[in-house]
Length: 437
Ligand code: 5AD
Ligand code: SF4
Image (tube, rainbow, N blue to C red; front, side):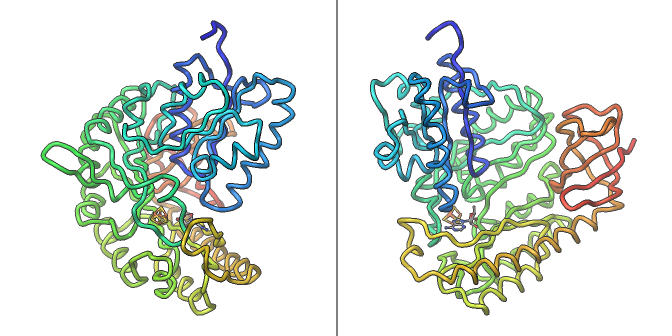
């Protein structure tokens, strides 16, 4: 290790777990003398933490690598690494197609980054090692804001017909309860007030704890006992894993925020079956009723795929009906993208223009619902956790209990404060309000 710190630039694509992983990779490399920097130009190492979920995301990696080529030519010592789900899925291809890449590391092997860096020649590690990467990573030390992610579960055993996750992230694994509680306490001791529990299938959490296997509801109840931890969230969930205890927790754990992202993907039973979702539109709606019975003011969001192979106008209308029936606060929607190795990729695609038109119609409906849900917040009192100063003087910005961005008039506000706010106005993507008391 040299005395002058080497500079590391990480670019993160895709989901929140990649954000978490990037932070942990930066810390693993920090132990090797690297400090993070904001631009690739001044870096000694560039690490792309990639996403494979849709074709566009995966292709972006190759075009970004192409753009790094002149940098590498000007500075042959520059190390270029590819991490994340594209690394996992296309590791060998990356090495073949992209001679400037020095190392490739999958999402379950990144604790071995320090060894890979020291390796002579180009290195690939896309194993699913038997050891737990979290046991081999340095403790989390980064300076942070009041809100943090914490991975509790990884991987997926559901095998939805469109999805690469079971292949890139591997089988479902839950971290033991004591490690999670320790990481959470440590975060809180360094000023964190809100923790978002992460997992590809987070509500399928089944970790070893005192007295046996714990579900997510029990884990949330234990986390809620931590002094100073004001808010708990979790993402992403599958409808079939919303068990009674977790639903009940939404009613009786005040720290569990009234917000739930619950992807449904489609409102057509025919398409849900073809997607291998193992639930129906009706069972989803009944589940929403039970969740709302536990927590009437919960804000619901979802994911949708349009243009899945075989989707007819009628199927699409069923999706629109489901959206109308639920009233989502927001949603992510995607045009189906055929992914290599998944069962649906073998099926005949829907006409691309038809899929585009459906996507536009669906997004217009969601935007309208989002507007309505936000407008209904006006006049209400909510909690807001300040994340930063606003652009205007005397203004703070934070997230409400329902995860709305809120601009608050507050000349004395400090980052990390959790305050009561009266909502006074709703803009397309945020709310405004005044601090109470
Ligand atoms: N095409 C389009 N969208 C997809 N998603 C997952 N796989 C695909 C695919 N092949 C979407 C799903 C999922 C979200 C994370 O990405 O809606 O919930
Ligand atoms: Fe992918 Fe989610 Fe289905 Fe798992 S549950 S296969 S992560 S869409």
